[in-house]
Image (cartoon, rainbow over all chains, first blue to last red; front, side, top):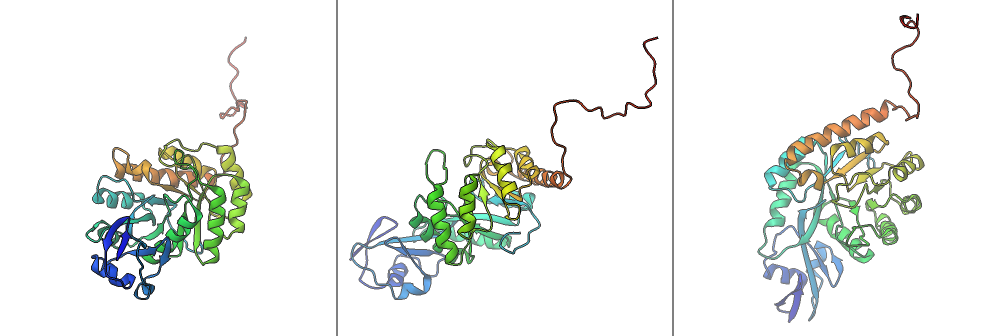
Length: 65
Length: 257
């Protein structure tokens, strides 16, 4: 199944957002997530199921003004 | 006082565009800021920047004010605010809804709408706004208890573009904390803002991109302190005619014989 994470295409097995994040190297990291433009709180990553073509956003703390 | 939090410093400092983390750290110390602004950006599975910046911020022990910089729509700003609240564990959000890419002028219509949504969701909103009186009234109606009018476009170093408007805003909102956010270049700009009675100043580029950011941070801190003291001391109003400072009475009569 193909998803887009921060615009990059990735092939992942169908499953939860949490599983996809773990597989793509985000396990245990300080991040926030959104799927298809909607914020997904950390506790919900275990229950949110990804579908073909979903757009996942993963952000981390960064310098800002 | 921002949303019930009392602070010792009237300088809020941005964390972007410094030459190095060490210089950022020294600049924060020199500025005596107790609030630093932060943001959030995409990170890859291999990226380490976000994690190391997070450790850095935690080590400072300072209060953080995350922003929604770069957001051009209400939806984007609201979703970004939610991500920021989770990442930084704070209800404070510096709300930016940008309307124009060249001037980074706020889209005040989107700003008011996003401020209302976020306030209803329990956020403590710090809106980056123009100095328009009615827009600011709408922001207060939407739940904002801090207003952050721009001095000039972000990063432009122009200072206070509309002193009249900023003075009117101060007079109109005597009880709402007002922060000049953006556009300052030199410490005298910050002093001028404080002399108008503004509660605080938010800076980034003026410090980060100065030749010596640490010394500039110190200079701004001094100017803000001086400007605040001047405001409290109630400055003279400008007048057209001279008024002799040395008393005329008692002057010896020496000429005209």
